[in-house]
Every structure is written in structure tokens, then in C-alpha cells.
Image (cartoon, helix red, strand yellow):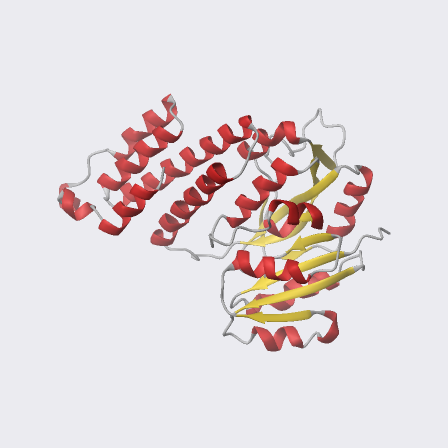
Length: 332
């Protein structure tokens, strides 16, 4: 059994109905050298009582609501382990999660960041998918020699951006690497996980993944509205643009991030078009072309300028949100 101590940080914001399942999945780990820190990010649903019921097995930390990145950073600042792991309160781990990942990092001493496959489940807990199944990097193919693990170096950072694998709840990272890259960016309440994972890949000596599913990611039915989808795309663009502008990335990786920003902007423009906000949709699509000029982005502009039904037509002035227009002017 590995002697590595793992500090597990679970941020929770009004996730009381799932928090016990998350905690118990950590306490059930086959690797027992760990500490569990639950950071209650200003919950109002009785999370504190549920967590304190575990006594000394779990450290409860309450704080005013400040967002997921700030909550995770606060938990990490209190951690004692040489490895950090993060688990969202509505996800859970399988018992072999840490054992499998620590076996990977012990087999490949240069690995500073490890992730793993996961199942997607619905609100009732029914498995609806497996993340690695069709991924061109970590998926199982006939020519794969090691069918359990994959290890990559910084030269594959651009491939990671294009075909990324792993989620926050499957992350295991050396404490010194986490500190070296500066932890989570607290400026964003969405896509802060991508922001961190891309920085980890850029800075790590090596990184890897366990191909066997080690966790379950809960996808909530009807959990987001159309407006929330638009906001998610906008904040993701802002997060990735911040990454590109303020952090040193390998050249090929930086181009891959530009591709990702352009893709998200095109998806964002389509969402705007579906609301008949054609002017903003066109501006967003054009910004995708500026971000990464290519035939595909030019071709996709057509999709946001298709004729709309007469009864849905609005004047151009009706399509412009002054606040949103100001936000566009602040973005590159």
C-alpha cells in the first residue's frame, strides 16, 4: 500500500442532499492515508449538520460564499498531504480510485498530475455513459499496449487541449505542482477547472490517466436554462482568453487553446441565434474567425445568419443588449 498522504477537498454550496454520498465514497477508499476537508461555501441547506455528523473523520470548514475556485483553494491551503484530490459534492468516487492513481504515479515517478476515467450518471444514479470510451488519446484501441494507464509528456499538451480527458472529480495532483501554478483562478465561477487543468498540463513533467472508471459524474436533468448555457459559453471564453493572455503556454498548446476559444464562440453564437439575437450572434461568430481564422469558422457564420420566421423578426435595435455589447468590446 502506498505511503502517500492524500488530502481530499470537497467544496459544497447547497449540495446537502448529495454531500453524504460524496464523503462516504472517500472514507470507503482502499487507500486509507488521507484526510477529508469539506469547505462549506456559504450553504443554507443544512450542509453543516450533515458534515459534522462524521465527527473527527471529516474536517468541516465554513466560509462566506465565494465561488468554487476560492473554496477549493481555501481547502488546499489547509491540507497536510503531499497529494491533493478534489471531489465535487454531487459526484462520488469508486473505492479503488486513489489506489489506482497512486499505483500509476509510483510506476511512473515523473507523473505529477493524474486523472481517470469516469461514468456519467443521471440524477437517480443510473449510468448513462463512460467518458474515455471514444477519446482518441485514452480510449482503448487494438494497438494499445498498456490497457490500464496512459502517460504523456509536455510535448502532447496541444493534444490534451484538443481531446482533453478527466474531470475535476478525478484529479490527483502533487501539492508542489498545484502551488507552483497558483491553484484555481478565483476570478471565474465556471471553467475554472479547465483553466487549472490546462496550466497543470503545461507545467507538469508528465501527466497520466487511469483508464478504468474511478468516479461517477452526476448530470442533473434540466439543471441549466438556455440563458445559463449562454452564460456558461461566455464565461468559458473569458476563462480561456485569460489563460492565453496571462499564462505562459507552449506554442502549439497556445494555438490549440485558440482553436478551443473559437469553437466555444461558434457554439455561443448558435445559442444566441436560436434566441433570434442575430446581431450579437454574428458579432460572436466573427470574433471566432478573428480568434482562429480558418474555413470551418468562416463556414459556420452562415449558420447564424439563416433567415428567421417573419413572426419572429425583430428590429436590429431589439437584438442589441447594451450591457452585452459592452462586454463584447472588452473581449479580444
